[in-house]
Each structure stands twice: as structure tokens, then as C-alpha cells.
Image (cartoon, rainbow, N blue to C red):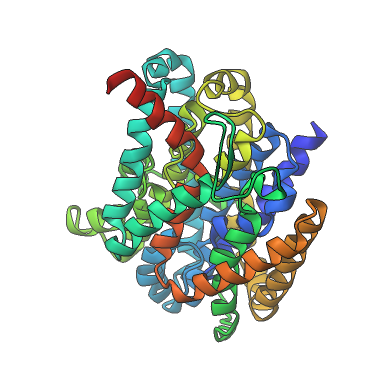
Length: 441
């Protein structure tokens, strides 16, 4: 129980920082703490990720609505429509209603997972290597098709598969691009690769951003009692319901998932229903909260990552025996714990995010000038610590420097995210395709 509490606290911290700081995101935070997360048990790791994803969506609306800057990618509609409302004096009411809509939508997603847990047998046909091979290829294809630079992304997908395959392959008893019986059998140090490619370039870029000017509002934020009564207020319930349903479906789309949920729901609400800006923000914030919950379903049931952050989690989880052969049993054994954590974190975040916006605003103005530099230092130090622990200090330092240079050269975040997914699924993808070849060719 203590271990799960520690995992929940870690997940809350990761999700809070990822949501409230522009340019960070959950994936960057997870990669920053790669070494610490790799020491967690499987259930701790899943709990940390679950809490982080559930938390970041609540607090991403703080900088979006108050300052007009996006903490999470899903907060773009809140920047466009919510910040002008804040400047007009409606921000306090908007954030209270969006927190309530997010809570109801999260409960909607939790209900879907609960329903699936009672009808989990429908997923057994998907638990085969052939199906997984098709799913892996489909996911990467969709990601490349949706990327901003498709040619670069396609190359990065192939490079990720190759980079993830470097080292000793026990199934085929071959060494790929490494000499025999050396420390290189373990392959490239993932911590150094992704700290250099993704983490450091993002942190360096946003470290130089201008700190937003503090915005003071004389408006009183609604009390917890008032917001509890909002749950019984049916004024925005139709918007929340249809947005939660749409978000739940979009959460299952490989590649896009919750990243597009808020923008799509905002556009539908605006164009199809002619809603005002206030209702549009409520729709967007509701949609992304249901989407992040349902996005967990392919990962937990099929060991299939459909977004980059899930690929990272799967890469760590596989070292604890998690995979297509064990995900089904893991889901059934831990579903009650997972549902309880999802319900608890949603309730806690609803209370905290809706009541303490002024405190979050102060934390934001304090964190922005300093936290990027601190995270850069921490990421480098933890990387060297991990390398020292594995007796690969020089090798990791070289990899860190090379991939940092590549990370600065390659401007497309989509391409780098595709590389990450391809890297972490490379082993299973190669094995799945090999099995597919044996049975069908």
C-alpha cells in the first residue's frame, strides 16, 4: 500500500508540472525521471503513469486560461477561447465549470473501463502475435500519416526500429551492429538516447521563454460547496456528455488519441451546435479528460501503445514481464486497484484544481523562471548516475551528446516521438513480424 501511495504522489507531481509548465508534457517528465521509474514495480509504474495522465489535464487549464499559454497540447482551445474570457472577468467561473466538466467526463471514461472489465473476453481474439504485428505496423503508419513532416517521420520510424534492435537478440541468437561479448550487448542506453533527443532540446528551448506577467483578478473563485452544486447543474450537462463520449472514442485512435480530442470537440461544439466561447472551452476540457482514461485500454489490455508516452511506459513495463501474454491477466488481477486509483485521482484533482487556482497561479509564476534550468541539471545528473550504475559512463555520455545534437537538428516533434515509439516496440515488432512470416509466408 505504501508503494502505491508513493507511486501516486510521484504521478501527481509529474502530472502537475507537465500540465502547468509550457513545453514540458508528461512524456518529457517521464523521460527526465527514467532511471527512478525503471526501479519501480510493474503496478507502481502503471499507477504513476495513470495518475500523471489524469492530473495533467486538470492543471493544463491554469496557464491556458490565466496567461494564454498552453501547458499541455490539449489546452489549445482553452488558450484560444478561455484566455479572452479571463480578461473579461469570467475566468474564475470558467475554471470552476471546466473542472466540473472534466470530472464528469473522467467518470464517463472510468465507467467504460469498468464495463470492459466485466466483458473482457471480447478482447481475447486480439491477444495473438499476428494481430499485434498488424497493430504495431498500423499504429506507426497512422503516426507517420498524421505527422507534420511525413518523409522525415518515416525515416525516423525505421531508425527507431534499428536503434531499438542494436545489441544481442536472444531469440535469433545474433548481435546487431555490436561486437561479441561486450557491454554493448545491452544495446543503446535508452536513458541517454531520449534525454538527448527529446528532453534536453525541449527544456533548453523553453528555458529562454519570457516569464508571463502576473495577472491579478479581484474575482472570488467559487467555493467547493458551490462547485459541488455545479455537479447538479444541468446547464452544461448536454455539452459535457457529448464531449465525454466523443473524447472516449478519440482516446482509442492510435497516434492521435487525446492529443486531438479537445480541438475536435471544440470545433464540433462551435460549428455544429453554435456554442459560445464559454461552452466551447467546457467541451474541450471535458473531452480530453475522458480521452486520457480510455487511451489506457489498449496499453493495459493488449500491451499496445498508441501514443509516445505509452510506448515509453511499455518499454519499462516489459522489463517487469509485461507483454501481450501477460497483459490480460495483469488487467484482471489489478482492475479494481486501477479503477479505485482513477476515481480517487479524478476526485482529488477536481477538488484541488477547482478551488486552489490562485495558489496554482502563484506556483506557476515561481516555477517558470527557474524550473527549466533545474530540470536540465537534474536530467543530466540522473543520466550520469544511471550510466555509472551500469558501468557505461563514457558510452552514455557519448550517446547523450550525439542524440542531443540530433535533437537540436531535427525540429519535428512528431518525428522524434515516432522514433521513440518505434524504438520501444522494435523488439516485439520484429518478433511479431517474424512469427507472422513463419505462419503465412
